[in-house]
Image 1 (cartoon, helix red, strand yellow):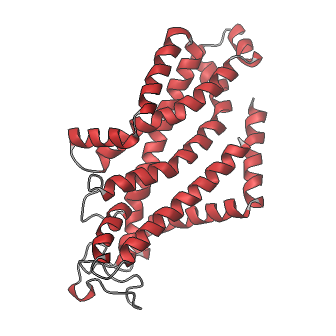
Image 2 (image 1 turned 90 degrees about the vertical axis):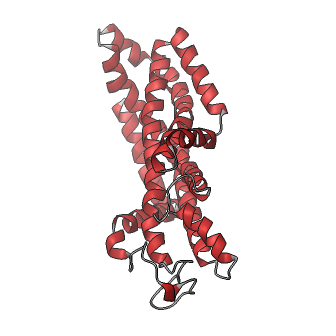
Image 3 (image 1 turned 45 degrees about the horizontal axis):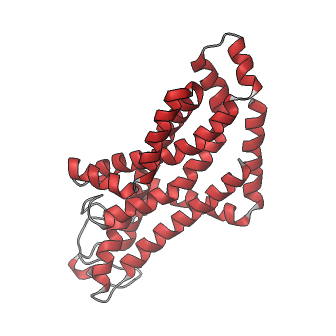
Length: 279
């Protein structure tokens, strides 16, 4: 079991260096994460500090991406805006992966009516668009990052659970599970020490694939004004405010934020495809 898992992970690590696109995608994500963590050092200005002399300014040596409608430095807001833009989706996928994996293993192990109930719940959740859950959470708790994360976590749980459940059912029927059960090992021990490790590559691949969609959903909700609230820098908010600035002759903010979102989503999807092929 451990050998199979190790070989799958090793194959993925070997495949990424051989694939120029996957290597470039990993480099882009590493750079974005590094800039996000180093935002206080990298960002040249306070992202929330207005400057009337820099209002809707174009790129200059002092402000590489110019200024927004309030004169705030676009580059600084782009760097700081990566934090909520990426942190939210990572939390969504991490929590939904844990919850979805737990539900999938429970359904596959117990079978019978437990599997039927869990499967029907997952089908219902899967049929509802993620943005609907986010809107419901915002309606109950008010606008902000936390309600949106909660709503989208519920929406993304079945994306992981449905795939992992199918894999767990196949693993559940293999001889090594029966052998461990015959040896008298508790069900929880078998699931955690034997079943879960062999499902881990599938969970990781599915989570990475879903991460790009979570980035888009969260940015879209922020664009609607229901997610991260001003004056906090966020790429979705920057696209919204940048469109207003574009109507006044300067589209740098919207283009920069939109390009950043597209770049991250493309990089994540490329890595997700590579993991799917090598799981």
